[in-house]
Image 1 (tube, one colour):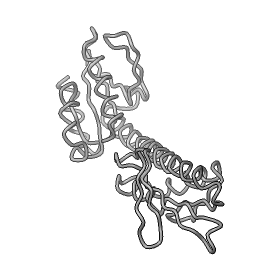
Image 2 (spheres, one colour):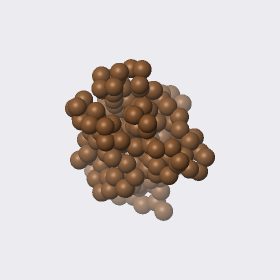
Image 3 (spheres, helix red, strand yellow):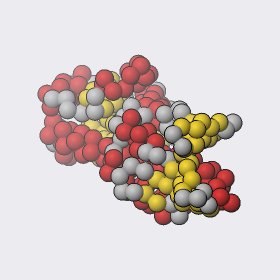
Length: 235
């Protein structure tokens, strides 16, 4: 379904391309000069989607430049993406802009999450090595679960006769689902393993936090070293 409105000399066309927020992409079109050419723009909607989700604006700018080059579009370096086309190319340009907007937003989110994950992983490794000594901490460890699937965890710590599997996660749905699957699978294995899921702020996770706590202990990454040692003792 496509719908459009006319506001202050510009057409705003709602396209059936769903953005990360769940809303349809809105492409803005207006004529230039005598109407032989048209501007087709996201009018800052892509950046708004990114900022609403608290993702990285610098990453957005890098992605926007890259994807615009692929589409033959222009990024103004700040907020707006646009195409300048003739009337005969207008329909195709509107479709292209809607797809470009989605690609820019989705790629920005993916890179932002990856960037945050790297940062929280480094922070966790430093904490664990301070608490247990580097020799007892294995970074990017792999464990097989009851299903025989092999999962990668952020860190594995030897604690007495058992193991503690640490895995970092964010508020993103895919991240929550991933940590749930991994923790529930290794939790059912024959090896005594304590699962501890680590996030930046518990308050960011929302209602799905209950899903993670059903299969693992959940802590914030800036937890005190003493607390980590107490968790290991409890294991």
